[in-house]
Amino acid sequence: MIRPILAASLAAILACATVACSLAEADRRVNFYSPAEEAQMGTDAYHDVLAKGKRCTDAEANALIARVGQRLAAVVKTDQQFAWEFNLLESSEVNAFCLPGGKVAVYTGILPYCENEAALAAVMGHEIGHAVARHGGRRMTQGVIMSGLETTLGEVLKAKGVSETNANLSLAAFGGLSQVGVMLPFSRTHELEADAMGLEYMAQAGYDPQEAVRFWQRFAKLGSSGPAFLSTHPQSGDRAQKLGELMPKAVAQYQAAPTKSGIGAQVPARYRTVPAPAPAK
Ligand SMILES: [Zn+2]
Image (tube, rainbow, N blue to C red):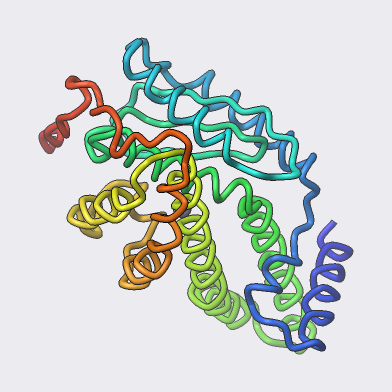
């Protein structure tokens, strides 16, 4: 499958290059998956996660997730067919995600950092932004392109008589470069795009958008040794700066929202404390 896919990807990239479009435009164009395929993959993966995970049984916490989710879903405009689901999983993992098709999961481990409903809306809105912008399909596409290019490079090096050891070293260097040069800038672009979308969603849903800034500040204090959610959501000066730039519009959207909740309800007391790290064994 790699060759036709690679050809298609190169054609898409070259087509883009000829009109000198930006990297962001190239990113938007190159996606091998249809929305229906993404939604099917998202739904399958979601059911897998739910089957393996432990559903939270706390009624108050579940009601909070459902309320925020429904209010966000009501303002999300997309031509993709989302069958929204919102679930809270009991886990110390500090994480949340939205898979294609509108399948949202929040882990109880992230609740202490949220502190309140508006910050939870910032997190869920950001994750929904990734799904609406179809970043998952683009990530997978990038993976297919990179693996296709690496396979081709390996064949070229071998054909040129480069020894297997040297070919492997070249491939390793290429793998590293692809991570740093292609994957990270793309995901940074996706992060900022999801931030912007999430901020609008939360504001339109009637949550004070300033709480998004406070949430990311609370989260940034955890530092680089923080949880998985932080390592996949890199902190940067860009983020604070971009949120600041977007804030006047978000505040106006918040002011125009039919129902305004400010920061909303507090997270239930039992989920407000960050658990102490497990003792080293
Ligand atoms: Zn993100």
